[in-house]
Length: 357
Image (tube, rainbow, N blue to C red; front, side, top):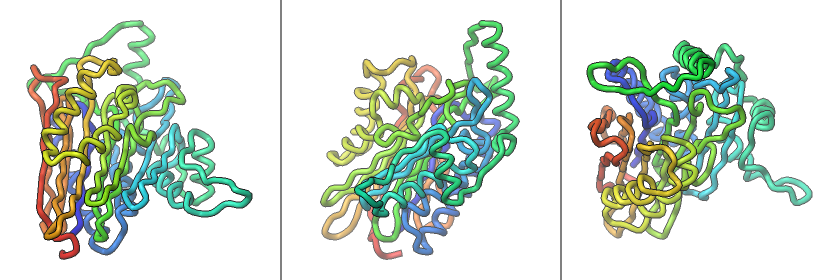
């Protein structure tokens, strides 16, 4: 059995572009399933699917990412796996076409033994991250190659707003949906044929962020987390307001709560309410976050796979696919305007024979 799930961020996805978001989720799921069915590990598949999401300019990851106040692209990415529960990440990386591949390579390199008792790094930032990417042969891109028209337009708009010292409030409704407000992370979770989960996350960060700012997509425990017990494995990735996700260590908290419950949807709802929405650490009101989690539970007769998603934002784009279906399930989950800041919870469950396809 193989399974894949992807998300394109928690934020505001305009209905005008909903087909494009769904189509990207569809392509990503199909490509990932092909890799998993051919025998790729969950880590390999998650990284390659995340690369597909980075390469599409409709996402805020890799090519097309938001710009800093200095007009630069600085990306974050991380990857983690249940096989060893080790993760690796890069932050504030510029000029590297696919930050997730740098994180994947950093993870694989971490198992090599260094001389004189040295330990391989699991987290590199800025120039050090770029130098590492170059040293392992990853594709380097010019600034212009990383830019998108929409990112430039957002940068120019906010540069003018800041120059005029005008405070602008954005409102959205179904009759006036002009601009997408997807300011953070894409994520991928894969289950491979050996029963291991891997999670990958990538982000260009919020528009007009301070240069050098590192978001949760590069922080193990906040942006991604995996945990393994005797009969269960869980992988989680997050999206939303980075500083609030970091302050609440949201991915770690979600994974731990999912491991100890038999009602994953109820547990996720309580987690979002108690540990995020009403957390004293959360600054933004209404609070903005999204979660995608996958849990595999083993029993004597079969395995139960549970996929859950949640968001407090206006929308979240999700896609998932099992290896015994011909096409992915695509979801554009939307909240009602009056309930913004309150969790919207959804999920999928299937009892599976893990090693029969």
